[in-house]
Image (tube, rainbow, N blue to C red; front, side):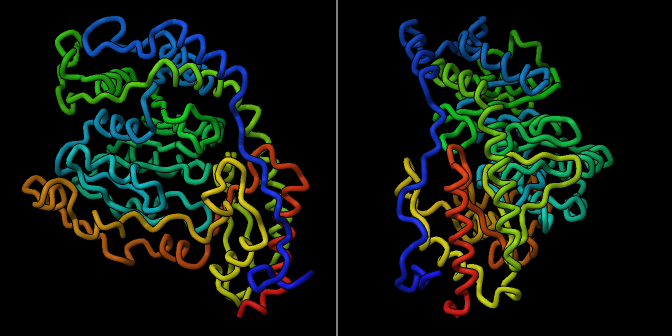
Length: 434
């Protein structure tokens, strides 16, 4: 192959990769139907049949619950809102601690702060990248109230082990399933493995309505509490039958009729777009796994992966070159993707900085200037956010893991082969990068 593009050679490919387009005539017809109705949001913030939302929202909730085989589905305006509502619904209080992963979108770790609870970071599994049950148990204290597990990259968390810990210590399990719709573990859908699960309908997700989320649970009481928090709980408590007033301060986490109508169409497409991702990643796992320094995606026994990202690991010792330098060289061989041109090539070394290294946690300052809730009379713990508390996560981020999205439908085999060729070219010329 020719000289590396990073060093002035010709790239493997210059034509843009095809964009991920899941919107069609169905969504146009659905939004037109809502606009013609004249009602873009059916919610009323008072005790009324529309306290639960309009017809599109309620239809989405029924269809979502049926699809994922769960008793309750509650539509919200984002997965971030869903996480906040779920943490409140399980009764997390000021001074409590919630165990969270360090490798996630920041909203997951911030959700406990909304209720003046303190996030505690546990380390990751070195292959699965989800919370490590051994590390979780080591972080449990008398103040721990819940575990917030993330199905990172589309890989379900170790529900067997973490749920057993939750039963042992009397904790709630909240599952952040934003990246894993359609994945499964031991015959159950991801998102339904804990006490509550949260799905995302953000623009970058498998299926989306721009912004939006869905909270699911089989627990009647938790479902009611999420619905109350979603829609100004305090205004309707007199009629709700709720006597436990903890966290019954409500927000406006309501989904519009337009979003719900689009989400209903999108839900019907999940079973179509997901197998294509899985097939594409299986092909890339096989081909890229032939490169000695690359380990393909590991999936725990009994699980299926939904591949929000395709995450692999790189061995710098085998390669003789740093992961960052290697991935920079691969990026130089490949083009941007339609619809996301400004983001650059959808391949990166690492994922996100461990969340505890963000300024909020390093300075222990969330609300006001008095370091609330990290330093407060109701919190008796001494939680560390020092570098090094999650060594597996830090090692993955600094030198091992890389993730990409160069496998989403409608990527064809020839597109995937260009990705493989870029990696193979850089591998062949890796000594030139030293």
